[in-house]
Length: 378
Image 1: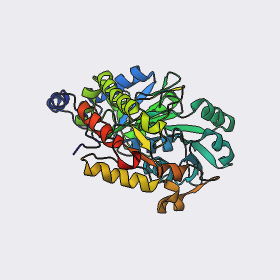
Image 2: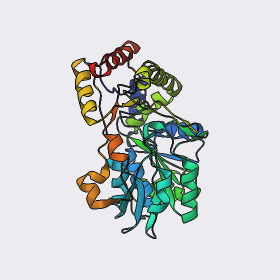
Image 3: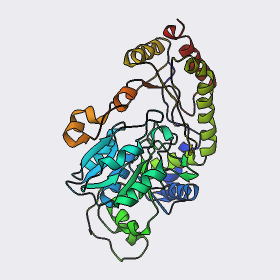
C-alpha cells in the first residue's frame, strides 16, 4: 500500500534528540527551541516566533492576544479544520462563516465586508494547501473596520504572498508542525507576530500565566503567577526533531515540488478532457507543495475513485466536512450569505499521496492508476 502520508525523516533527527537529552533540559525553550525560532525569524523576516504544542495552541494564543471576548464575532471560511474555529469558540466568540473561492478553496475576500457587524473582532484567512489568500484586500478591510487578522497558516509554512511569508502579514500567524505537514515535530506549531507590544503578554500566556521568561533572562529575581495562561510550550525533543528538518528545508521543498509537478503534468490530459480539475495558484502566491489535490465531477465519483485507488494499493483521502454543517458549527456559528461553493467543492476534492520520503516510482504509479480509472476512459 502506498501511504497517503508519512512523517518526513532526514537522518539527523535521532542525533538531535539524543543531544537534547544529553543537554538535560527537555521541558522546552532550550537550545533546539531557540534554534527553530531563530531559523523562522530569519527565514520569514518576522520579529517574533514562539514554538507551541500545536497550531491549535497558536490559534488559541492568537484569540487571547487579539482580545476576543464572549459575544464577539470572528469571520472565517467554513472549509477548514475544526481548530480554526475552536480557538475562538473557547473565548466565547460566535463564528461567522463565509463562502470560498472555488479555484483556491480559500476564503472569498469579496464576501467578508458584508459579514461584518458591530460585534466583529477578527478575520481569519486560512491559506489552504499553502496557497495564499488575497491578503492585500483582506488587510485593507481589516484596517477599514479596525479588525485583527489572524492567519491560519497551518499549511502555509515556507509559502508566500507577493514575496512575504505567510503568517507574517496579519497581526498573528499560526503554523503547524503536525506529522502531516511539510516539516514536523510530531505534534507542534508556532505563533508569529511583528508587533513588540504583544511579546510580554505572549510569553506570559505561553508559560502558564507566569513571568518565567523574564526570570530566565534575569529580569526578575523570581517568577510568579501574573495573568491568565496555559501550557503551550513543547518539549525539546520535539523541537530537536523539527530542527533537523528545518536545516534540510530546501531539499524537502524541492522533493515536494517534484512530486507536485509530476502529478500536475501527467494528470493534465484528464483536466483537458474535463474529467478533473487541478490546483490553481494565483500569480501573487508562491505555494509550498503542501498537497496535491484533484476535483472530480461529484461526490459519487470521488467515493468510487478513492475505492478504486485503494484496491490498487493507493491511499487517497478527502477533507474537510464544512464546519457550518456540523453539529458544533450550527451551535457556535452561522453562515453569512449563500453557500454556493463551500459544500459543493468540498464534496469533489480528494488528496493524493504526498510526502518527502515518497519514492518517485510510487508517484508515477499513483498517476498511472488515476489515468487508467475506467470512468475516465469511456
